[in-house]
Length: 249
Image 1 (cartoon, one colour):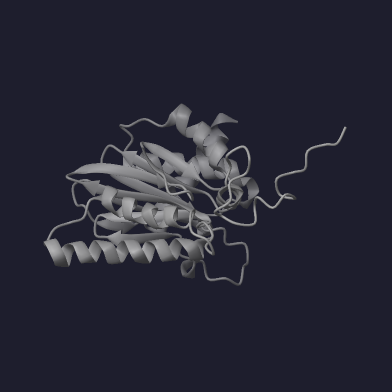
Image 2 (cartoon, rainbow, N blue to C red):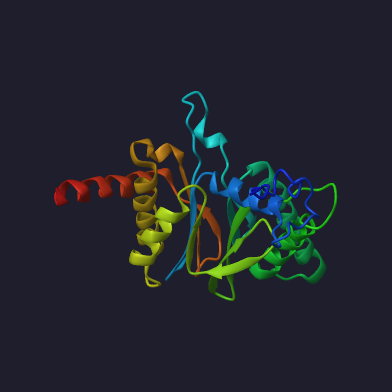
C-alpha cells in the first residue's frame, strides 16, 4: 500500500498563501519553530510594576555584552523583548516606537499598550496572507503601564496576541513556564520577580548561566518610567540564589 507523501514534498510549504489539506499554514509553523529556537525571554506582572528579563545568549568572549540589545523601550512606560529572529523584532519595535510618537503628536496623549500590540500584530498577520512575503520569525513580549495598571502581552508569528500575568518565550519556554506555574504569585515585587526569573534561567541554561548574558528592565506603577535593571542588582540576586542552593545542600 502506497504511503501518503509528506506535505513538504507535495509543495504545501512553498508559499505562505497555500493551505495544506488539513488546514495548516506550514510556513507559519516553521516561523513558530524559529521562535522556539531563540534565546529565552520572560515577562512578569508584579505588585509594584512590570518586569522583562531576557537571555542575550552571548557565547563569544570577544563580543561586548553591552552591545547586544534584547530589551527595547517603546515609550516612557512601554518596553518589549523578543525571541526568534531579532532583526525581524527590530522592524516591529521601530514601527511601535513610531506609532507611539505619532499618537503623542496627534492626540497629545499616551498610547495604550494594547493599541501598540494590535498595530504590531496587524503587520504580522498581513505577512501570513500575502504572496511573496514570509511570516515574521519572532514573538514579542510587550509590557506597559496603562492607567496605573501593569499589562503584559505576547504576540505570535501568525498575528494573534494574548494578555498574561507571566509568560516566557524562546528555547526555555517549557521549563520556565513550569516554574512560573508553581511559584509565580501576583503579589511578587519586581525584585522578587527578578529573582524568580533568574532562578528559572539558571535552570534552563545550567552551566552556561552567566550574569553577563542576562538583561532586565522594569516599569514601576508609581513612576511609569522604563528603566534598565542595574547589573549590580542582577549580580546580587544571582549570588543570593547560589547561597540558598548551598544552604539546601
